[in-house]
Amino acid sequence: MTLNSLDRRRFVRGVGGFALALPAFETFCGAAGAAEKPATPRRLACFYLPNGVPMPLPEDPAYQDWSWFPHGEGRDFSFSKCLDPLEPLRDELTILSGLSHPASRNNHGHHNADQFLTGAAIGGGGNYQNSISLDQVYAAHVEEQTRFASLVMSTDGGTGPQRKAHTISFNHEGRPIPAEHKPKRIFDRLFVKQDGDAARRLALSESVLDHLMEDARSLRRDLSKQDQQTFEEFLGSVRDTEIKVAKSARWINLPLPTVDVDHLNLEITAEDPREYIQTMYELIYLAFKTDSTRVATYQLGKEVSKGISDYLARAVGLPLTHRLSHLTKKPDGWKNFGTFCRFISEEFGRFAGRLKSTPEPAGEGSMLDNTLLLFGSASSAFHLSRNYPLILAGGKSMGFKHGQYLNYAGAGAFRGGWAPGEKEPWRIRASHEDIPLSNLYVTMLQRLGVETETFADNTGSLGEV
Image 1 (cartoon, helix red, strand yellow):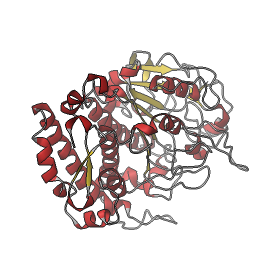
Image 2 (cartoon, rainbow, N blue to C red):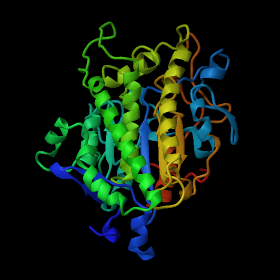
Image 3 (cartoon, rainbow, N blue to C red):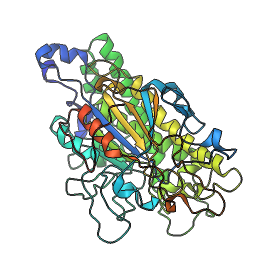
Image 4 (cartoon, rainbow, N blue to C red):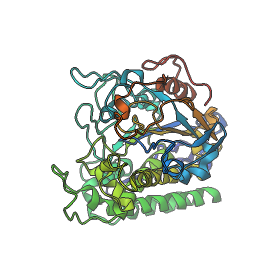
């Protein structure tokens, strides 16, 4: 293996059939010559949060602290406690309100994960027909450049039932792509060569790195001083992720509940869900850093309850996750729901910050500059399928402008919450027409390098981002 033949998709191969994907190194790119230097990759990751977000009415005492959307607008805005962990990334992201998919605005909020990235008219019952998701449009555009076209993940795994999907990725026929939820399987897929016995042998060993260090030491001698440091940091990241994968196994292997199990002793600690989410984010980070894929989706939880993801709120000492959205009228209800959302923001911010602090392998800027992150939900207030809470982060090298809150809902638009005796928000007629979310999706695809003017039911693009 010569230096000029090794790029970021090549592997160090050790004994026993194992392989370790590598980041790009300036040493090899220089040897290959300037004409052969690969273009800086553009990446896309999409994250979905079910069951909406806290939206107390302005007159509610909880409004200032626990309303998910920022106060103010444009560049003059302040985060509430739901999003203030993102303050260090303020100039790297944009918060958006007043966008939704027209075909789904009258859906009950528990039917929304299926259409978040597709915009399809899946309806609330009867015939079901979905369409291709945003991530898979981009995956088709870049699939020849990486080992894997995309990484599809969720906390609950599989596909789930129609209208209550466990995946937000759908193929060109509108069929759900099964999501992987076991970190060990994702880790093996990324870092274990798939011969017949490799996975079994790795399961019996302490670490994939233990089987690769001889080749790794040989490679290290050929690296520049800067690349040697990068290599050591990368090996440390892989090792740390292995440890987290092992720790998360007990939590994710809990049996799915079929009845109310909150009264049972499930022998899980509050730290397990947090470490699980961190592990899933770290696997995406490593997949991007090694250019194993340029597309990833992660559905943090499924709509409604009775799934592994319903335990996530225990990371902050709260009861089952879905219940939080139903208990907002109880004492500290908005605070509890907001505390969970703050935890979710914290971990998303940790991941985005990791990308920001990592120089682009053999490229310019940071990994975040070349990675576009979409985070959001297709519900806002209780079961309401309008005014989606959305965060767009990264992608500065693609021309995205950040450090702003784009409030397309307007000051007088329906914002969420409801007074005693009123109908639930999703039953109230809209007083404001949202902008099609697909306008944003077309803009994202165009900046990612896909030549298109259309996606789902868009009416144009969204130049303000």
